[in-house]
Length: 412
Length: 210
Image (cartoon, rainbow over all chains, first blue to last red; front, side):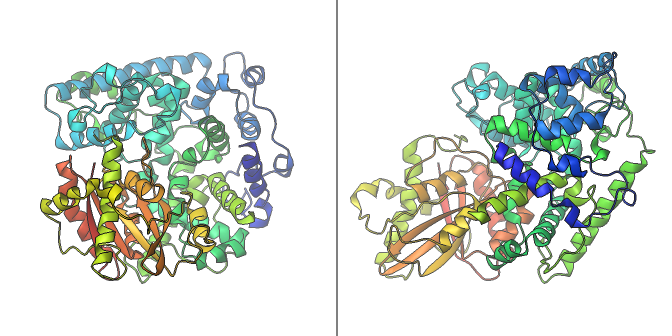
């Protein structure tokens, strides 16, 4: 894993050659595009003591960039993940104190259990809509196939309940953690109707549950992660197409020979990297290495993803779905009231508009092509890549990891 | 039963069905027996016929079963094909056939592909995301051919990407779960998708699994 990450960071060293626009012209810069950080060898994981030194007496993070840089280069000591992941994902608003964070987690956990109780009651009363029942069936089929090799999810006899639904499964049939993963995903899907459930989400949620060891806390973290990655799961696939296009561009730019090789074998559309990009490499490493890789990746995200869009911390549901999930919504609505995302968040809006533009270009290019289906525009040369906040839809490091994995195979 | 592939005889049944079918076609002198053409969703009768042959595995000739295993990674699989040295067949495949799997989520596409390419059934599989490639080399009469199986994700949400695989396919394996009516109903949609997405009328074989 370390070797792979070193190679990935080795890919990062190519940054100066990429003609990326300077930070002044394109908004906030990538945190680690500085020469000293790029040439530094990976350091040991951030220890508890070092982590504490990043917090002031009230538990506020003194310098988020210093912390993220340390994590990016060395990862976290496993004992710190539970707490530090919430900062990286990010769950909390800017400048939160330790006490505020604890209060937020408690409040949110309580709200989560109310939301969950609500759909469970609806289900038990037989009043659940067909669409929600379909969600439950789909999620039932996937959670029993998610990280089952990990001790955390072992146990139970693993037999699937008749009818494929897990909502009324007996405890003994499954590991309790599988049921927690199930409840978490169903709650998310029901309370985020614009996203719903798609295959791959269980893979993203699983490490969060393993690390948080608590269903509600894992849900909060999952909401934070999905805020950034939900576009990958949308039906129209435009975000994924943009990523395929950017990865294609990156390979053409970095390694013309490799690009030509892929093209001559009909792989230049990069669709074979779908799993890498959708799951952000979660499946490509051993589980424990995955945890390290994920935190490094999150620490390397551009500035715009340092804090949640909402000033109150990460929202637990979409505004649009209040009252949708249940008839007994009196308690839910009250519990679920979240303030809407701040419209004054201009850097975010600007990013959105850049992403939209990028996607429109991609879809325009696709529609102008000979085929009516989704397409990546194959290029012979790429002079300039999109800025870091746009490259890879805001996760450029992921693209560099993909490129490094390919180069590893190429060299062999 | 929605667990990927539990009783092993079920899975070898699927694999065996396919091989039996292949062999039958071969005996009928139908050229390279890749897949069966189906005008529309097959009636259950077809499944019955396949089931009859399920246990014939041990008695039939295995001379054309010359597996060439390859890793599932796309890149490795691809290069495997191009350097597929003949550790097994001593001959380069004359042709590569790209076969795409299709069918609803959790009907057993990945298990089926593993059974076919590895001759062994996985006890557990993970949800397929995107696409996986597996290759197997077969000797059919005097021809050595390679079958590249593209194992796709079943969820409806990713079909716009799955279409791009159909477009390049030489044939499709349309799999449903015979314990799940919904997955059989879904066959119609899948057939439409395949017909719309592929450039020519490619052969489609309907497979009942589990």
